[in-house]
Image 1 (cartoon, rainbow, N blue to C red):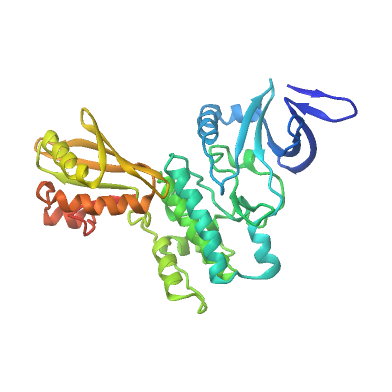
Image 2: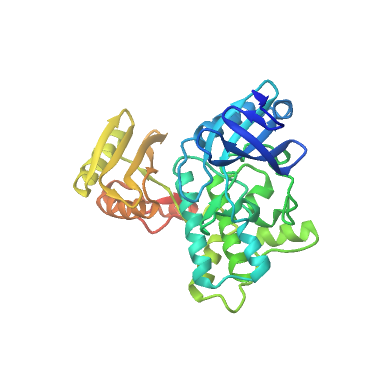
Length: 375
């Protein structure tokens, strides 16, 4: 795959490789130029043997195929992937503005409106990727880059399947491998929801942007873990009330109370057919097109929302002979629009939702028609 051209330049496909931008024990990142278009790119070069040794090949293939579909102004584009006998070449967008956190290192903390601007870009990108079932699982400062116009770009989205040492680009980062940005349930290692873990990291990032220091920082790892498990942190006095409120809601150590919920469940004693008929009857006047298939139903918004058409996947599961659980999940469109839709829908579904006092308490139900919510 890699071939020499005149002089000492090495070519990989249509890319001419240049200087090394970073190097780790498993991977290199090189600057490269597309000889057909003159465009600059970065190429991450992985050693196949090492990836195989980690039994990661299937997962990497899956994540890479999804990443090729991700096109968002705040996520570094993955243009293509090539392979030779010994190497995997991942061709990525090249950005020149450095890390967002270098800005804080040199100029100190950001003003709230500037922090808000970056946080919105971060959340938009994270939400977009989550709506396509791609999770980062390792959001931290060195993954937040700026382009020449100061626009935030998240790197390594969807490459989270790669083992840590394969992903490390070898550049010296003080926060590398520190768990300061990691959600409690990830440290706990008992299996976790990638979306909630990403959201926690976004909360820590927002705190650092506005404070100039970390919410959880201890030289002793066990003390640090204890603080993270309890969400034991204090907002500095210059944080506005609304910023404090937002950060406190995001940095909630109980993952069951996620902030941005994209999936809602409720239970009903009606039959599956009755439930689906009732949802259809309620959703149609709200401007939704309904497609049914067995116990699944897809609701597609007719109007274009903030992120295209809102689409909602509905599935009914039998959990006991006379009890069904109904799950509504946003499969496309905007999360906030999904919540608005669910609020309107739940008003029309009041008669079919089964509310048992005990179960409502046990499941930590929200006020929405006794529904339990999880992200």
